[in-house]
Structures are given as C-alpha cells and as structure tokens.
Amino acid sequence: MKIDYKSLLFSILIPVFLGSIIGFLTASSNNYYELILPSFAPPAWVFSIVWTILYILMGVSCYLVIKSNSSKKNDALFIYSIQLGINLFWSIWFFVFRFYFLAFIWLLLLIGFVVIMIRKFFLISKLSAYLQFPYLLWLLFAAVLNIFVVFLNM
Image 1 (cartoon, rainbow, N blue to C red):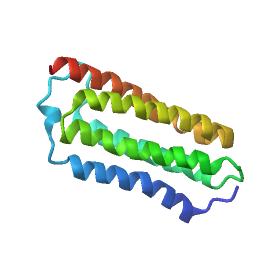
Image 2 (cartoon, rainbow, N blue to C red):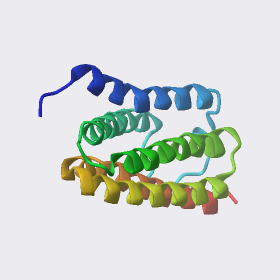
Image 3 (spheres, one colour):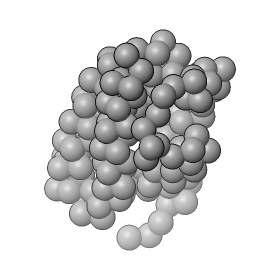
C-alpha cells in the first residue's frame, strides 16, 4: 500500500488535537498533586508523554482503516469516533469536576468501546488492531489507578 502522507498526518492530528484540547481544559485543574495517590502512580509528566504516543498510534491505526477497501470501515470509524469523544470527557469528569467515581465508570465505558473498536479494526487490518493494544493496556492501568484514587480520597 502506498502511503498517503497527507491523510496519515490528518489521521494523526485528529487525536493529537483532541489530546491538546484535553490538556487545555484540564491545565488549571492541578488536583493530581492534591490527591492521595497509590504508590504505583506515575509522576504527572509521564501522562503527557504516554498519551502523545497513544494518540499517534491511534491516528496511524485509524489511517490504516481509512485506507482499507473494507465495506466495514465506516462502522469501525464510527466506533473510533465515539471512543475519542468518551476519552475527551473522562479528563473533564476526573480533573475539572473531580467526580472520581463517575470518571471510573466512564473509563469502564471507554474500555468497552475500545475493545469493540479493536475487534472491528481487526476485521479490517490486523495491524490497526494491534496498534490499539498499548491504548487498551494504558486504559486498564488508568482504571486501576482511578479506582484507587476513589477509595484513597473518600
């Protein structure tokens, strides 16, 4: 497959842009340092690095689906779009409104949509599905971290 660099860049910029919006919306909410965190919680700076990598992987994965000839790609891209929206709102629930338990439930919803997305992507491009595994693993880690924050900060 010949790479369409313009489409690839656009596919990467969408999740990176949404991640930037999340960063902007939550920048003034530095409650991460005010929380009682579990001992395995990474320092705050790790999150921006990990999320940037994950957003790039999401974009590449999306590009592979967009460029496929599969009749299933519109359905897969719809689920991809939904999970991006859910992803955006988790940070708002957690950092802006400090609704930690709602954020945990929201994160479980996101994990569910990511699993569905991976399954749909797998039917179109195995590589696009595999590129989503780090995202899913990070979300599972985030869910564990989130539930610990709920219980430690009651």
